[in-house]
Image (cartoon, rainbow, N blue to C red):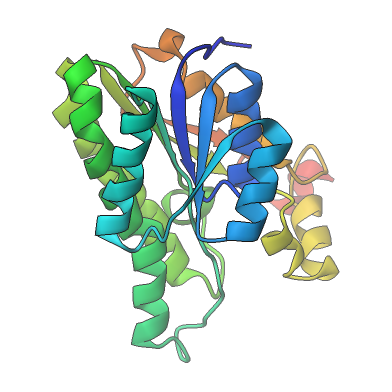
Length: 251
């Protein structure tokens, strides 16, 4: 495992699911992790489990994003890593989707990415070093699924943002990359029901869902000093889900 000893990392949405998996792997690699999440109870519990710190954060609030970043920099004197992970994925078909459904998805998934990246850049630029890892998805940029057109748009939007932002920071020692999870076993995914989980597992060549730590290991690599020559790129972590041309290819 790459060493993140003495480095400071913020993981948004780190209280549960994929974010918790990312935070746990970064902490295991030696980073001082700060979990930033709107879920106070789960966030404090997760932080205690892995020896991390917790900050309450509503990522749709630009002022709050800056406040958390400033508090972390003041406490530790540095900020090396941002894992912008917070995301939601409620379903809504096009014929019933409301403007509120659309705006909530964009605010939580896409606009928050802009807020957090913008907030961390000054401290990273001051030290000419930074690693930013965005949690996107295979949905949107590579695949689609009925009921998630707004989710797909938000996740594809993250990747467009990432590529141009990476160019702006390329000469400043700051890299910006993304992990693109497939179907990962989280409480949110399990809420879709057993039939959905089985359907998804059957569609994956390795015949199982991923675990949050699988995304954490990919994020840890991109967050490491060794990944200095990688920016504006994506790593798909999906057990080979997008590879088959048809279902028959994996029977």
